[in-house]
Figure 1 (cartoon, rainbow, N blue to C red):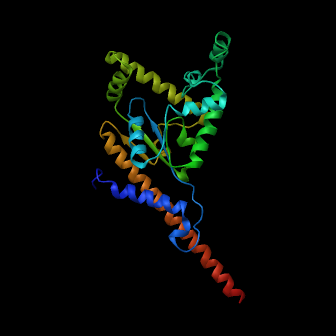
Figure 2: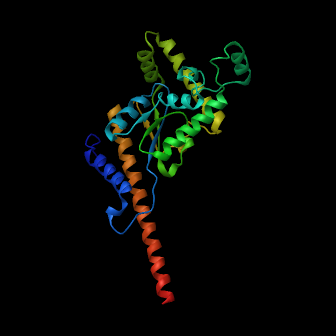
Figure 3: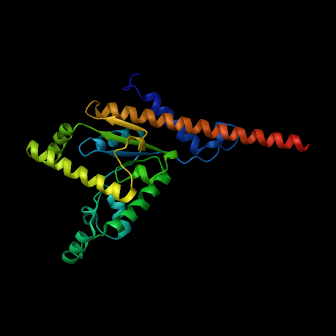
Length: 256
């Protein structure tokens, strides 16, 4: 399979989306309601998850919610996004929060309040569908029936190199420490709120190694997987519709 040639896949995805908007045009009357799909991308620190999400969103014409998701959460909380950086994908301790609230009351946001508004924001985006959400536990918040759940991983050394490029000049040791610390905070956040191990591959439909794949390769695979899930959902919905129609016809014949 040539993953570079995905025009057919993207065309069919958009065709499926058109059928969702205009179900009567597919023939046979209105099709059962199918919530549109969302792509939830989980990623190790430095595994280029944001880059892949941006490329997938660009190709599909879907909005991508990454750091900008804080804008929506902050709006719900009535705070500027800068006040959420200390709790974004981080597990806060009760003692630490108490101390911080005393010395910086005006800027302090409790992790519990952040999580509740994050949950509502992500679920709201998922109900609309046709978007890409990066991190923030989206794969745990959203129903698997309408979510493509992807995990991006890479070798620690490769992730440290990415971090060094993004964060500015730092030694290999400093970059490695940063990646390890940030990854530990993300994992602690997810385990604390979902009581699940985010590194367990069973939580995902697709796990991609960005030490082996380019961003374009990974985007190809994500879009192909999305098409497969959309097509399966469409086929299943039409099958269920046909089954209901058959049962109705049988019941009518039995009473005639």
